[in-house]
Image 1: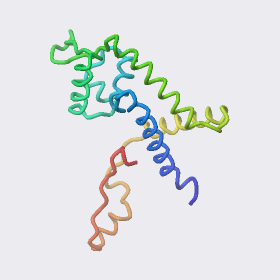
Image 2 (image 1 turned 120 degrees about the vertical axis):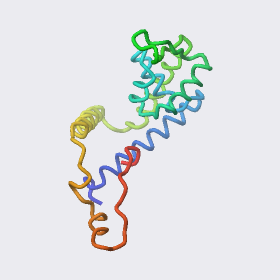
Image 3 (image 1 turned 90 degrees about the vertical axis):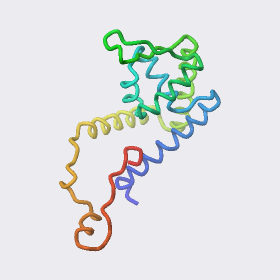
Image 4 (image 1 turned 180 degrees about the vertical axis):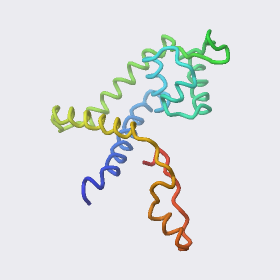
Length: 174
């Protein structure tokens, strides 16, 4: 298959394998990927609201509440009332969690070293710069209108073939 045509498949596969390897390492610390993400974002942005943390970590707010409840019961964080909005809670790491954040960064470093093994440093830099530009290109795009570009399956459905139009894929699938 043409490498340009398979770009999305390769990117998705690399992401899946990279995440799996990191999760294997994090399991040794009894941490999940969402917990690691929450801890790192809190270390970088102390005092985030739960709503903002959910956005940054790409975790549903209700799921994040359960994650935060567990981390709070483990003594890793505390929720404080936001002085500007008493309905909101800001999250702060406790000293116990700061050591975990250091460990998470070590796991990330080890996983990245494994992923880039046998790739020259200069090529790694080009790859990261290119992926960053691709991300920026895609982030700047306006959403497509659902009728702007019919997919082949939706045009077949309109011709009475009996097939249903494909559903939009979630971000996790693309």
